[in-house]
Length: 254
Image (cartoon, rainbow, N blue to C red):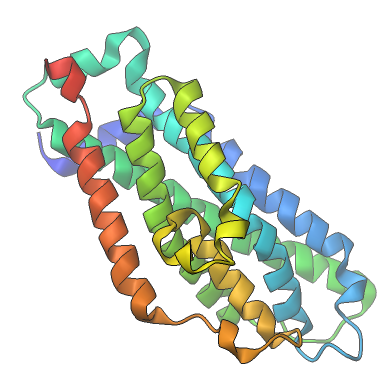
């Protein structure tokens, strides 16, 4: 069975889940709160009101709401096999367990991408409706928003890789959810220490925090630098992905 066929089967399984409605919840929450405070952004002192509104909305989203929703998606994807001994049935097939784990992680990445698309769409639609009613003439910076959503997507990859590894290692959903939540919550605190570079749960939030300097009086030394972040992020991603791949179905095999 080819990788593409496995991917197709996995998506068919997910069709019967409630993942799609789930990925709308966090974007709707964060954008609705941003729209509610719209009047505070479109004032004379804001020269880039759209950008300011997006960054302020993305701050809570990147640190908490996006990771929280991805934790649930991880568990929902994994639970398709843990119930009714489904994992044993899958491992009985002439398919590598490494390929099975990789397919499931690809599905997880797809849903992360879809949530970023939803976030962008909800922000644009909600913002346009709100500004029409307020008579705002400032142009929506669509390419700026696209760049930011893509950046959030990339910086979330090591995080969801770690989440997936924990979900694979701890089969009990309550245990994996609880551990991931405990690791997400201190993200904003770790982001303010030198340890942030080795803590994937705060990568996206740290990126947004650094960009607040464009709209505040903070010092310029908060700029987000690709080095040494990029090598460290790639290393973390490779380590947790390898762990998830090698440990998936290992207990059931023995």
